[in-house]
Amino acid sequence: MTDMPDASATASAEASIRDVANPPTAPRIDSSVRIPALDGLRGIAILLVLLAHSVFHTTFQSHPSLNRLLAVGRLSWSGVDLFFVLSGFLIGGILLDHRESPKYFKSFYIRRIYRILPLYFVIVALCWVVSQLSSRGWTPFGQIDSFPGPVPWWSFLIFAQNLSMALAGGFGNGGLGVTWSLAIEEQFYLTLPFVIRKLTPRNLTCLLALVMVGAPILRAWLMHYGSHGAFAVYVLTPCRADALAVGVLCAVMVRNVQIWKYLTAQRRWIYGLSSILGLCLVTITAMGYEVGDRRFYGLEFSVLAFFYGAVLLIAVTGDDKLVLGVFRNQLLMKLGLVAYGTYLLHYICIDFFHFLVTYYSNRPPAVAFIGAYVAGVSVAILAANISWRRFEKPLVQRGRAYDY
Image 1 (cartoon, helix red, strand yellow):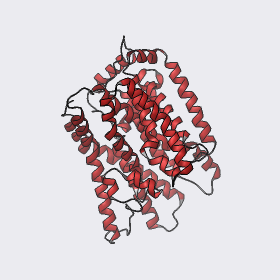
Image 2 (cartoon, rainbow, N blue to C red):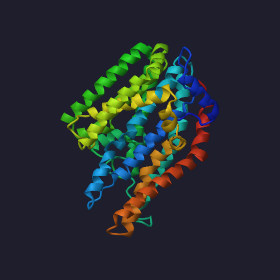
Image 3 (cartoon, rainbow, N blue to C red):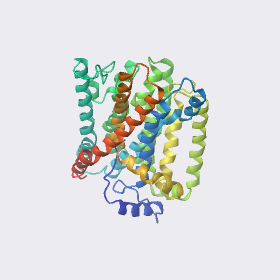
Image 4 (cartoon, rainbow, N blue to C red):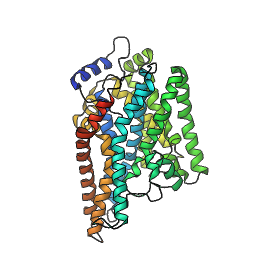
């Protein structure tokens, strides 16, 4: 959700992607080429998350048929898994392209700092202030649970909240609970640069395969033996590392001449794989799946990782109707551009409007909660747009001044 290249030079980038889709002899994908379809994929990822926390989060006690219809979106939370695959692909690609650079570590981490930390710490600080004021009764609405709850506030400062959440067996109070996935990505950024710098592409591929095999084994073990195991496998980095590894593997594949030529010439096999994995996900949904379902022992995360990996390869290897009509849809691309801010803000906004609904009514009607979801999501997207234009984009551009 944080890995967005600069938005400039769209026209030239679209010309470049046509070359990418039809390479003469070698892959033309590298971290300097903006691939518009990835913005659309990022838009799909944040849209899934928004739907998971609003539309598909709603239940109606008097309308069981409507609840069954909403159950179709049980896996919409997996937009986070799509973010992981995208992060692995984009960050892995950047590191692969610059692994010999003398400024490899310095430039990478400075750019990440400019992209991620400013907005994140502003939001964490704001939530902390609101929490302190409300705990002292200094807000007009009484107590607002921003945090800490069972998750200590200091863990958010060092991106260790996912570890605290795993120990507590819950996300804690307030809208910052969604930042568990950001903690995973930050921990990923701390390790991947060293791995790519030290390993050859072949050894890196072997390590990625090991991660993709090891993660589901670890998930099954934790779900069977661990305290809060079903929840821990959802928020711990080693348990979600296979989605990141799939993304990095895709970055390795599209930079290999022979593999690239095969992928672009045999795209029907990628479509076939994504269709089979998609049917598996439909079956899991039809079986009444819920997060932490012990019937699958975490294997659903592997299916999701490979499914989104296949979708990613479809997006970057061609310009057919699906790519042009969906992944390069202008609305999805614009939503993808502000995905980071939207992700950080959306649950906070939803929580706030829910609080207002319950504050002004002891028994608010269902429509009031629906209105709170709509208002929260709308305000989050609007705020994220303003944040991107006025705050984040200038910082990203400043970070890009540090060349590799």
